[in-house]
Image (cartoon, rainbow, N blue to C red):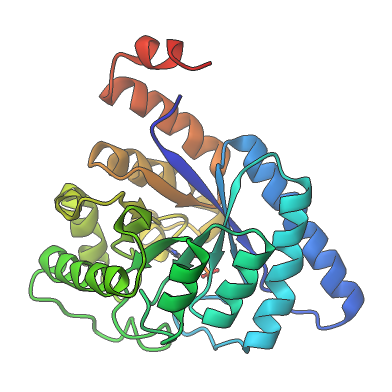
Length: 276
Ligand code: HH2
């Protein structure tokens, strides 16, 4: 049994607005999610709003139209992977939880919508709190920190306290330093280098480096060709204590982490022989 979790990215950010296109897009996202599950993802992170630097916001109605059919389809046809909803809107999270999602991945860490904490608490869901400096439109404009790790740890600690105060059980909280969200290349690299310091917060560390632009800056490669770079950063993050890995390319990351886990956390045979 592996001691890590792969969260496969299922983005539903269509360009087409016709119903036919919508149905096909939902179908394509469901098929994609099922493939990621077959490759080793045990969480599928469904998102209907891009958080890329400079991305424009999407209305709640539009986000719902994108993600709910996909969640329903994955629950109906999936093999048991849990569903995470990547949203900062309480209304979207509420409908997603009703449809069967069990984790809310909020890149604003409860700052985007005052109703979010109540929805997560009422739904008994897990919550991923991610750090972002500013918002996606402005976050890459000269981000600065006193000490990137300490500043983000303090932020996450404060958001955890707020979440617990709102009735979310601490055992249901995951934390994520938010690679690429208001960070320079050096900030991202320092976060990875010192990732083990986040274990002080006592909650599972989620890491999302998948295909991100700092890997492009380092390797000179376009997003689809950053798989090896993504694998390298996830292996390093595992070694530094992260246990949840948000990736687009599940199969290579899964294999790399199986081998890393067997090497870093022996004895592998004892751990696997206890699996039924
Ligand atoms: N990164 C992205 C989106 N959501 N959630 C968490 N917890 N951690 C991350 O690092 C993270 C995230 C951005 O990645 P991507 O899905 O590739 O882009 P987009 O949001 O434009 O779909």
